[in-house]
Length: 326
Image (cartoon, rainbow, N blue to C red):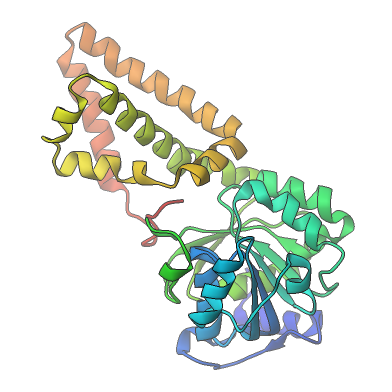
């Protein structure tokens, strides 16, 4: 990645409406870009938090929001999350030089279709979805040559509670944000996207969309699927309710992510089905190894398998505090 000074120089040549702001707001906003108009499509937890973070960082002079539910947009306006509510996605993006899609991954294609004839030719478009290959395909299908304006992103941040009422400006502080550029993106535009996320507190990693989906199937999507299946299996037993009364910290820690939003996780698992199923097969193989040793009464081998897993877990250190829903 080029140094910040070089990225700023590139940005100043990229578009007349994206002015480099040096030293604006808090210290962490130094070197960030500033936009005339930010359009947030989907004013829930993530979209609302992005708007608040952008306001805190002086990232945008004016913020307009749109949500499928008008009551959500009205609440965002009342809470000062946005400056203006739009009654359609198309109207929201009119005049915007930064557009953020904060909707479920399965809704991305339809939303891109809605805005493709109204989004400004100089605008940067980003999403915040948990899967990326399907989003990249949606951009190619819906935006055509204008997919060059779309940079897929995935902030690893969230809460167990959803809704704009839980949005906060610091949601992305110290959190990993994965930027997955398309082949059609210019390096200048990718640099702008990186600066946007860094400007609101994120720690940026860059990888290909397919690489992202393979990685997150392993470290996020499969663990959620296992947690869902485990809690379902436990509760389905005749004595399941009684067993739950005895559960302690181990159950709490293991099952926490099973409390995730059902619709969101259905969409994520559907969008990344092939990679999740690939990881599931690897997990089944590992579990079968434990089962085989247990059935044979080879507890020394079981202990060895546990020790190896334990050592790996103890040796792992989370690169950021990003340990939330996605």
